[in-house]
Image (cartoon, rainbow, N blue to C red; front, side, top):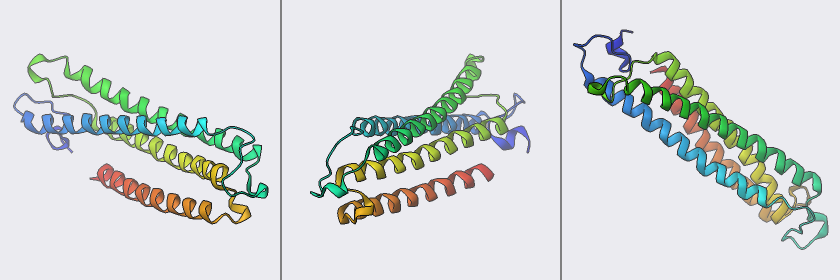
Length: 189
């Protein structure tokens, strides 16, 4: 793949800057979107942390359905791990954006044109995407524990908790499969 074909690494002055402009701005936009989504998920993490109070009674009206301190501990652990993955993903994306912006600022005449190794950019974007996926998985696990704390333990047969967990797992898993598929497709094409 030559510099003109990969769209970001343009080495000859005669090469069209239109491809470079479009590709670099698309990468920056994608990284911006990833950071913004991670920020929203991070807010969800802190909402989940606020719900991890010991001794709460569920809405199930049976004391056998009340979550133990162990469920609250799992919630806390999953929230911290989720936050760590979102932070990792955001920092990698911000680092790539910083590299693109700093490389762009070297030449005033070519403000949107970056000379960056496309393989490094792709692997960095993939690492950021993997961090987001892992953060989503752990956020989903923590939300299962929030549901158990609020609606009752799944093990006691709480129908509302089981319905909420089934909906959560179905929708999040479907969205993650679509996200992973498109990320892999974009990575290889």
